[in-house]
Amino acid sequence: MLASLVTALPAFAQGDEASLERGARPDTTPQQRYQTAIREAGGGLKVSLEECRAMAAERKGCESTARARYKADMDAAGAMLRNPDARPVNIVGEPVRGTETTYVIKP
Image (cartoon, rainbow, N blue to C red; front, side, top):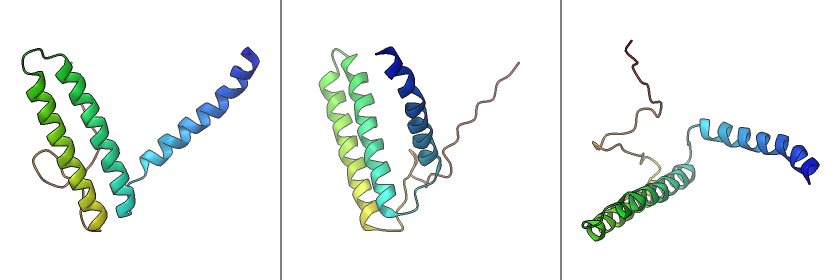
């Protein structure tokens, strides 16, 4: 049993590396942008619902807002599939310029 796990680890690492490599390439087709958008929408809904569960009094309203946001995100994903020029937008409504996050660390 242990030997099979040890031999499976390199294959898993290669699959993980391949997944990271695919994620590092930008989406170039409407279908790729659509798939990314629906994955992001689903992940956002999951995180939002987890945060809503922590709220006691406002839970129902929070879940309703989270589901409305998910529906809006899915509608936007559908627009990306129908319109080849459509791109994801950030919170302020402008096109996403980059996905790299930088942190300034002060001494």
